[in-house]
Length: 282
Length: 313
Image 1 (cartoon, chains in turn green, brown):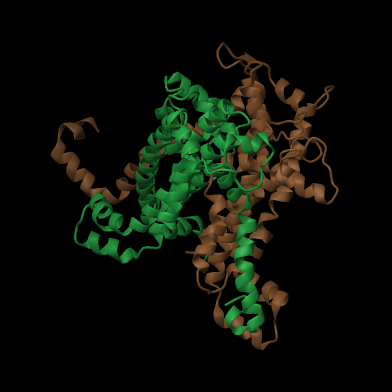
Image 2 (image 1 turned 120 degrees about the vertical axis):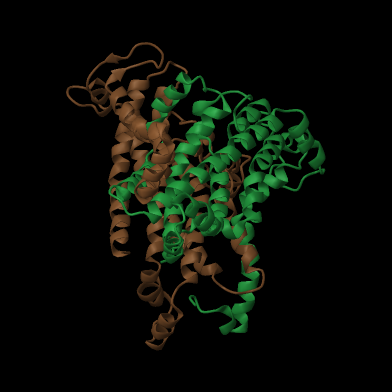
């Protein structure tokens, strides 16, 4: 193990490590801690210039209550859910199929198609922006959730295919051969042999894509406008213009917007990290 | 084919015979269609649009290389000042964003211990990456507020006064935004290295210790070579992230002050969908330039992956 385990070091360095760890964490998360404190402060604190001190009164229920009951926030949150969940399902479904096709079969153009998916995934969003916006307008899907969902599914399929294909390649191929010898149809091999083994990959991709799509801002402002379809990342800017310079409200709104992916992360941490660090280990 | 469809039994047997050859294509078809419509074809369309003048609604007017000439200052024109600023800001982003890699490694080394509660520490250190860039940008913009912001307060203790605040001053604004971007990016690199460190071969470390390697030498000669895959991915995601930077700029400064924080991705968005009218052709030309900058990196990444792919067989 590197660096040397702290247990093998002197008592003094063990002790200082234990002390320094929480201090480092607080320093690292200082911006977040500040927002949390902001979000429970009363309005008056900011007027009086008490930005970074302790709150003069605890206004948690008041501030968050206003976020939920006196703004468009709930609508934006719902929009985000209705955009994110179908995207996750669509992208994972499509990419488990492509992953199967590219990971199991040898045919001409296999690597070419695979690399097309990877390359498309690296492309700057801006080169897609004008045509995709135009296409969405022509399909009468501008400012709808469906318009965003369709694009997200298509784009995320690139990354998901990379992930799924590499995962399927690592599965024991003998399982598939055994099924073929038994005369099982290829699509049944996918459904009954490969798909059950892909559960960890599906879980990992689902949390990852959930976070990516939930946090998307660029496409949200390119393809939608207004509270009918916009997700919460775009909604938060509208929310902020409603509460200009009301830092306690903006903080509470930001925290509400950030919570779902954070929750997902803690819930499925193992899968999330497994997905994110794919390829970091050989 | 039509006769095969009218005779289902014949079709079925034909399908069964060619099962292995056909199935992959059937499985690929929906995703490839989707991906082509929304990703591959639009790249070509952007190239096409970049040779036109277009407001996004009416007819496109073909103008040849005009957009590029105006953008890059070809011929007797001067380079678009906004483009110049954006381009150099992109370079700053690229170079400074790479700091996330050593910083991530540093934190990973710090956290790679087995004391009680270390798992929670690791996930809390990773936290910034999970939060949307919009929220991170907002938080940092409050942190940078002139007079009231914590950063300004702390700088005040050292007698440094940045006029207009970090984000209000054209000399510091871009660096302030990059620092905000480095926060989640460092967390990402950290988690890559933590995973990499987990699989470092303990025997090699022991052998290195017996040979008297310690500290930095051990890190450089024994550990880092084994972390190569993690470093490669950290490099890929950091480069892509730097060139994609948009959210932070849109939220923190909206390109200002005086357009000093524009990067190409933001400049393109601004030109195409600005309140002063949609200049899609000019925007597309900017996107094409950005695409070519990125293409260099993409080609290199793909080449590396392709080489690994060949070795893996």
